[in-house]
Length: 294
Image (cartoon, rainbow, N blue to C red; front, side, top):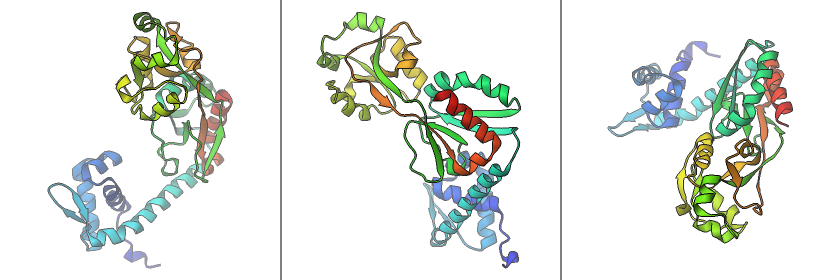
């Protein structure tokens, strides 16, 4: 191999790749944790090293040139290789020290995961744990997290998934809200009530309609991506909402609004990259979560 011909800096190559994928220097700088001027210098340095112009710089956007478009797939392959090296290296580590990142929804992290952290601290006191609360699916292959707790089964063959204890969601309201609007006598009475929903209530409409509750997005006066804020809005009487039964049971001010309602099933999966299972710290946490949440 002609090593002298491959003299460009990987940081510059990564800067170009992320800029091309994010569509702007500002977004790429945020993704990489860099300042925009630093990233701009990296991209310019790569262009100088390669002797080509990778981006057309317009007042509104960065546009890939023909050379940039042709080289992008090669740099993507480099990015995938770097991800695989990072995963393989992590898998070879035999220490129960270091960092581990777990991603879960805010409600799952607060009401389920939190209770297991004491046991984890006892078994691996030197482990540094980052808990990422997000409703979005983290890309484990790109090391956005080491372990994920998800509510859908992953389809990626490179991921290991273990099904945990399923939960179910029921319709709850605070006693104050029920006192204010009255308890519904039949399912159609819920159509005139206010609801609290997640970021986008649209996906809820069909399963609720299948259970005899006809709603529109107009019923949802408050929507939030925060599971804990959703819970608090329901507790404080802002409307009806879906909550896991185990979570709602902790709050005596909440009641099942319509006891005949057929609960919505919620699957729960514990997920990790298959190569990470050879790493003892990842395996320790994976097994501890599996046991505690099953």
